[in-house]
Length: 89
Image (cartoon, rainbow, N blue to C red; front, side, top):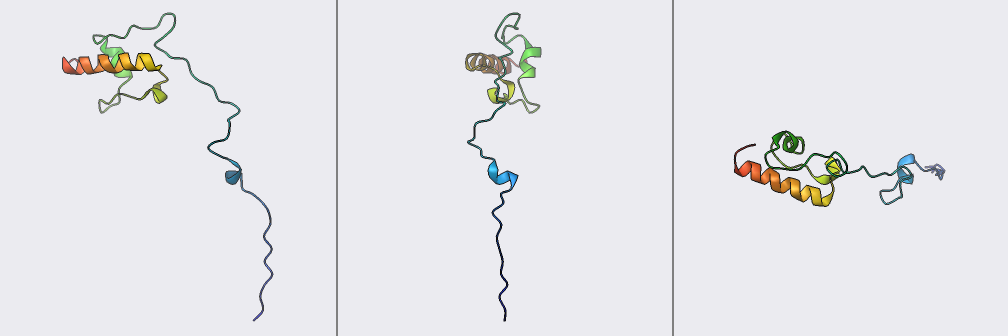
């Protein structure tokens, strides 16, 4: 039996070059839509605004998806819970 000479080339796929922990060149942060000039006020009576930050199942969307700041996210979740409690949503 003859053994074949198998040479391994030192090639890398594009996937092996990418890393989760690598710095991204085009990384940017969106601004909070609820803070700034002309932003809507978060209130439990403003149902149209609250429904925008809820899923179809009635769950509160996380801030990483909606790009809302931490302080506004707390206010938003509090007013959604109040509106649920009063059966407005």
